Length: 414
Image (cartoon, rainbow, N blue to C red; front, top):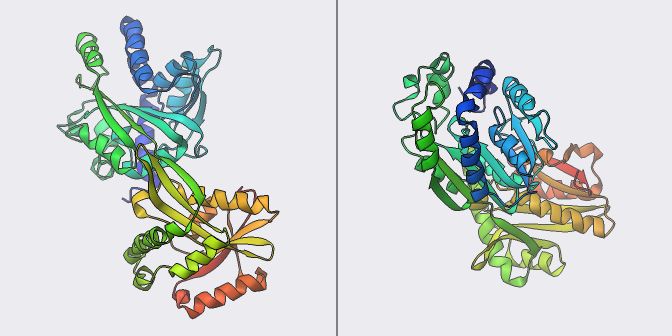
């Protein structure tokens, strides 16, 4: 199975739909309810900004964290792919003055608006993620600059999933499923923390939840599980800013282009990977015209240098994006989107109606990516003469060895 195959998640979700009522009841046992509330209030308060911050709780299950955070005054959106779990969560939240907003959504590919949350939380979700690094890079994009990721998990199955006796568990998390869940049988929580770091989070910290372990030993945990030391894992979203490029950025922009070009090699597009970056004189021309921008990370030591760049030119009726590139070391964090938003604002400020660009039609991070950002494909028969001139120049450069397309987007970015 391919990890992106939806059948994998359907198998997982069917288990949690079946287990929703029993699992949620085990999470809310009367004899330890007051103790648990105190423990988890302390955990989340230690990690999150003060309420009323905007929090997204991913894989909310029966709403354990989401409901508690709403009670503490946070503005909470909570998502899950299990209808059964969401039913449990909504029932438990009934009667709250300001309950979480529950929604059906995939934590691996969340559809929530980018840069809309001060914090993202998850509890007992990381171990069952398909493609965890890709998922966490998407979580990074959901956070506002400097926002907090706070997740709780443990190495639940160091002896393997088959050791869990819960009815239906091993049958659903069968070998062809678990092979695509890299953290499911992790030997240590450090493997999860390493994923956060690879996904671009800063200041990743592991905090052992020893009081939770003590409570589990005293009162027992969810059936099928042994008491395990859980950890709070926190990280910070990087802060990036876009500014107009200056003459001193030329060589950094060329370095970004060389690094970004290497991604094409894996697709058998060696001539693109080997193509020289834009000449310094060409970039200087865009900079002098005020149509070049760089995106860079803000760190405690100051700005870290260009992580991506965009150059453009004015055409009749549009701002044409000639090139937008991001260093793969900063990939998957929404920097291309930030650059396009800046170009979009520039176009609107000067009364320009749309953004245009040309790109490879079938490369995943080209046309399909731009379509997700609201661009539409425009066939040559509908293109104006200036865009056709650009297409002819690309063809003369040999780029038509692979399908190319013209794209456009209204200059309101949506």
